[in-house]
Amino acid sequence: MSSSCNRPAIVWFRDDLRMADHPALHEAAASDQPLICLYILDDITPALHPLGAAARWWLHGALADLRRNLKKQGGTLLTLSGSAEKLLPQLTTLTGATSVYWHHRLHEKERAQDERIRKTLEQQGCEVGPHWGTVLVDPEAVRTKQDGFYRICGSFWKALQTHIVPEPLEAPVRLSFHAVPSSTLPDARLKEDDLCPHAPDWAAGFRKTWEPGEAEAQEHLEDFLRQSVSRYPGGRDQVAEEGTSRLSPYLASGAVSPRQVWAALQKHGAHAEGPRIFLSELGWREFARYTLYHFSKLPFENLNPKFSGLKWRSSAADLKAWQQGRTGVPIVDAAMRQLWQTGWMHNRARMIVGSFLTKHLLMDWKKGDAWFRDTLVDADFANNAMNWQWVAGTGIEATPFFRIFNPTRQAEKFDPDGDYIRQWVPELRGLSGRALFEPWAANEEDLRKGHVRLGKTYPYPIIDLKEGRDRALQAFRRL
Image 1 (cartoon, rainbow, N blue to C red):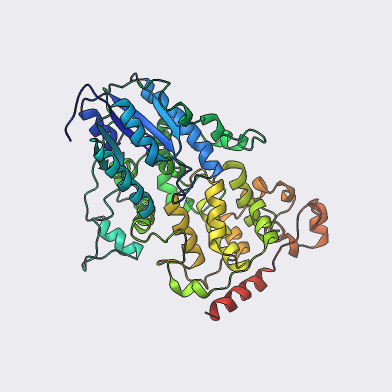
Image 2: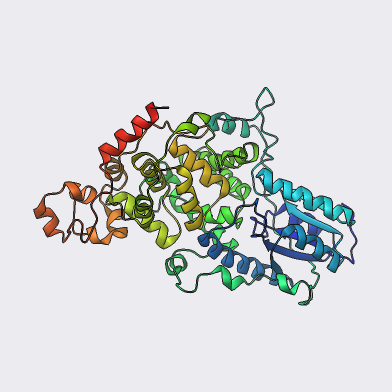
């Protein structure tokens, strides 16, 4: 792109809130133009997916962190709220910007919006420089031998590994900035404090658990490689242990890039079992984004059309009990309460609660997806939908619908000492053994000693597990 050194360039940040391995920022810095670093919260455009409450809390911290990092180089971050299609052209006109840099997005509606903005900017004489900065490789580049697109993760992962993943870029060491007067678009300035809850303030557990930011993302990655990755093959499924990387919210907000994680694993030794399996999980994340790019209905419809005739149940009471962790099934309730208090849930627990909702309660996976998008700090449009369709059995690659997780067996296998249940369902701390996993089947003496009164201190199950399983299988057979 040509440059005009005395006129500014805009770097439009989105789900890439970092300075290192940021191709758009890197090229903008190389232009020698003074920069305007911009973030737009677009809740106006109906075609786009709004951020949930937990993700907004995370965004508040991520924006503050990016602003601090820019300030160290003498700059700042301009945050606006409104229609990006209106605000970005207005800003380029008011500031005289001659170029805009951003990273490609994935969903066709997002790409269509970017294309409309690009045309408008170019009509104004402004050049646009889009880059891939949120994926390992360009999703158009990974194709089948028939020049199509993969529908099976294993085949995709094998093909992906034949491509060269670019080395991550260092953060620019010298940046110059263009000062945007406070009188510029004053009515569109984002009130960042409104991203956080106030009355009531439900984020105390979030603040105790997380610190958004680029440096924190790197610390999580380094700690995981140093302490946990060797135990990852077995530890990743133990819900009471710190056996996962907990990088997901940092990846979702772009505080760390997938290329940075990939490169760190390669340097650590990608052929050892732990790093190899973790890389395959990064590959699953990439496949979710690849699928969203090529199959835009992923978040909205069953990718397997066979399930279009499945009659899901509708029960506001059951859905609320599931959301609140009051189902009467301890492992499910523990997971849902962990989610509510911390904005995060262990991956194994996500599979358990997803299976319980879609199979035992026979409720549409989209209801679970919507709840997760509102309550997860790592809410990700592609990952959420892909994982829900996987556990529900409705995706292009998914666990079979007739594979129904038994919550009791899952708890006994992945929380054998009951530590996870006791942490998140404290009213059951007095129970042990089978009674902890299935209090409804415990004898009265064990319940009395454990200070548990079913229906009073802890609910009866909202569904008999065998009946729920049988109902789901009958619904499946009717297809």
